[in-house]
Length: 126
Image (cartoon, rainbow, N blue to C red):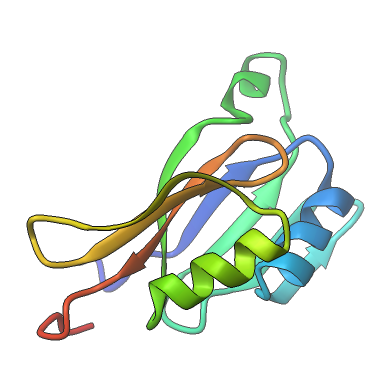
């Protein structure tokens, strides 16, 4: 049976540019970087990880700059939002409270891939 979710892979145009954004701007920790294989992985701090790679075919180029559906958990969404705005991260949605009790914001990486910041309700158990 499935025991956890593993890698969440996102396609980017330039791994070096992506490395600077995800490591230096977002503060993620690099777990693996293979220049030859064009593969970069960040440790999520929990189960699973975020990996980045470049398109491997003409058809896969269409997967750069999409809504990923990936959320980054934060304890203080307002503080994180303000800090990332100062670092010139582009947001499409400022933090807002959702009907189910959480708070979310939507931002994009330099290639246009979209992600969520997500502050879960206090009664949510991870």
